[in-house]
Length: 112
Length: 114
Image (cartoon, rainbow over all chains, first blue to last red; front, side, top):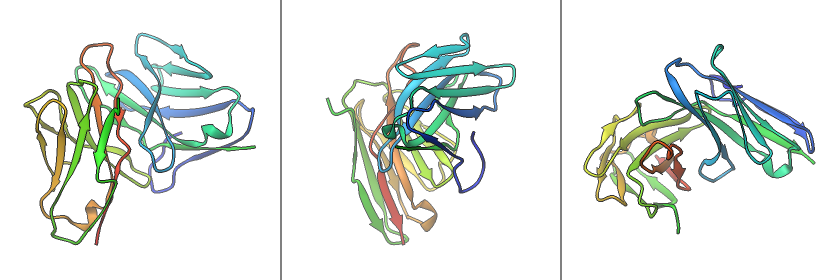
């Protein structure tokens, strides 16, 4: 999950495994959440998003789960591939605001 | 359709020098944003422009100024660069309306201030 400090939390998995990346958000007034993937030397790339009126949303090989009770967000990647290796960021948006607040990221390393 | 384009990709400055980072988007988006990214710190919002003609401070605006030149372009200026501004800078844009929430990012500008 997300953490404070210079070193990113890292999740190491084998190719073909399912990956789960966790994120704790801070503001109970947040109504929109989003996951980004950032490969080395590139800008963040949109993966999937979810509104607070939903608990789950599925995309291609990815699922986002939202637990508002404990303010927790997770990204599940099915059948992880080496190309999934990257840093993953969650972000939240407070209701009524137009800006996103990002978490500090989790590095996913996928071994062949 | 290039999306969000940032220039330059790399820049080295001496302390006290000034420079402007350029950003342009071709998606007809209303809102544009400047973030900085430091190791272990995620992305922090510097300034944003919710629409043409408006700009607002984000989380870390000190030492920066912005200009929303037109709907396409949003520039970030460092008037007197400091080593603490060594970072990777990302510009992003977002469309209008309730279904256009996600930000589209440029590829970044890596800035070193010596």
